[in-house]
Length: 418
Image 1 (cartoon, rainbow, N blue to C red):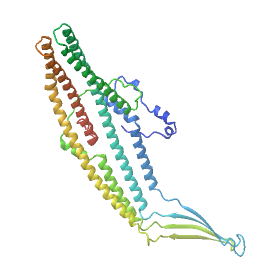
Image 2 (tube, helix red, strand yellow; image 1 turned 45 degrees about the vertical axis):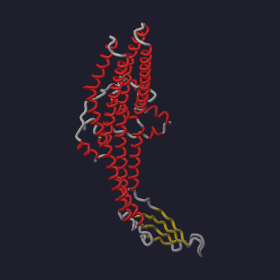
Image 3 (spheres, helix red, strand yellow; image 1 turned 120 degrees about the horizontal axis):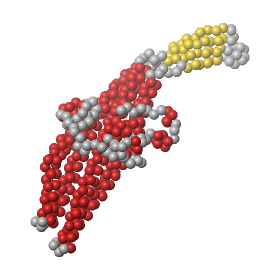
Image 4 (cartoon, helix red, strand yellow; image 1 turned 135 degrees about the vertical axis):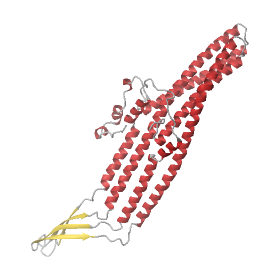
């Protein structure tokens, strides 16, 4: 969704008032989906508005670069205080001077400024990708944090039940006091992790609220699948899309811009001529005459060689930057793709084997403990194993979403969809 540049009227408002008017009203939303969050962020966040202003500034700069220099009006009185005194024997010339941009430098300057506008648009495209990836990851981190809190709450309730049963058995003399201490330590440790998870949820929610410009309002309930259906495309597809990354396009535009600046500097070796047209009044005659002049600067001492060399160096620098960025982006893409493959594989193992087995092991252990067949230490170990399995599973889900966000930022491919 394109972000429009705010009007000049908005710019004249007090900053606080303009910011308040630009905030979305979350009370109108019964729930918040990923698509809604991304649309709100695109419409209201000042980061995207800033890059649109940069585009507007470069477009204005291109317009200015293509403009002719203003003409000059000159008045030249001569012999004002001559033998005849006053203006009677003087001559006055009124002329108009205009530089003629015939060496092509003006056109090249406009084209170079146009490349600068392309650079700004590339930077805006990259900023938009990066921003949407941040919103995507923040949204799922909120969902994951909610899930962590819920999982720990359920397990904490189960642990509290175990603690209550152990306390009754100790009071009845069926178990030693040390068993109660072990269960209390395990339960207290679980509560610590539960509080930590709540704090993580609070931070994640605050981050998402900030991205949609409503950090001072509570978020509506989030709606979304923790593991949405996605397709991990072939590696070659991501490689091809990476070559269209705005950062590479930016440095290609910088190369074209430097080449145009080199041509402009070469054209300016012979500066533009200046023509003069005017009228001369001879008060002694009196008589009038037309005046015409042509001035052509001679490149004797300054042949603009420094500007030409500077443009050549900038062109080579932009080429080197493109090659360096291609390598950096390629390394990031490889890491993100491998992370996505690994996370997807691990998630499947957790869903099919680890989570069901850990849950069944904990239930059977609790039953055996109540029947006196399983020791308390085995019961606590089974409980902790289930906790770690759930938290590790959620971490793998977060790793997957982190990888998908990186793939989108690098290739503009969201979860396998074009």
